[in-house]
Length: 238
Image 1 (cartoon, rainbow, N blue to C red):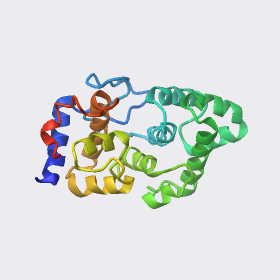
Image 2 (cartoon, helix red, strand yellow):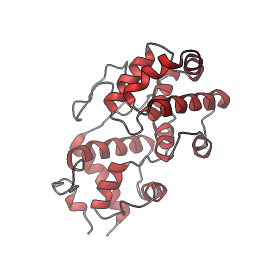
Image 3 (spheres, helix red, strand yellow):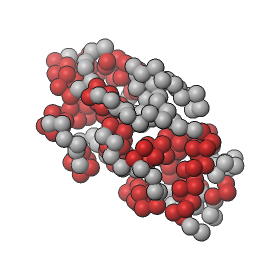
């Protein structure tokens, strides 16, 4: 059994099934993704030039924090609320948050964990102000309070186009069901497994994560996970 080969074949199978996903979605972009479930607006299938400006870059960065433990629809609402109050850059957000704390919290309340995420957004804004336009290292971004492995990889992969594989619960569900990992494996163990075996470039890293999410929403949202997954069953190793 060639695990490296299978991991690449699974990517090809998911791409063939769901087509290009066009992540990260942007609130002011009119593109759509007609092949995905849920919200379809703001996506840009096959266009890998995003983010195209600083505003979009920080929309990804702020969105990566807001999406912690929250449905995307709530994040989208929070981003739209913020967009009416601040420019999507660290200086603007921090200035507004410090002067208008309650209005700032009200804007993001729909994304849940409001006090926590308000602090995390301020922390990441301070971090980027000090960074002065450099691309952060993974180690440095993880030093920011509120940034864990998944959020760090989301920021690096989708905001900075760095080749970091983003792992989430869906990734673990699919690939533990197929027998390649244990669902209790650590984040870094699963991340290293993909980065050691998947041969894609940074654009394909983005697609693979998005395709995993799309597939998992259909077959791995309810227990028992994967039992109706006829699409990937041929890749099951035990």
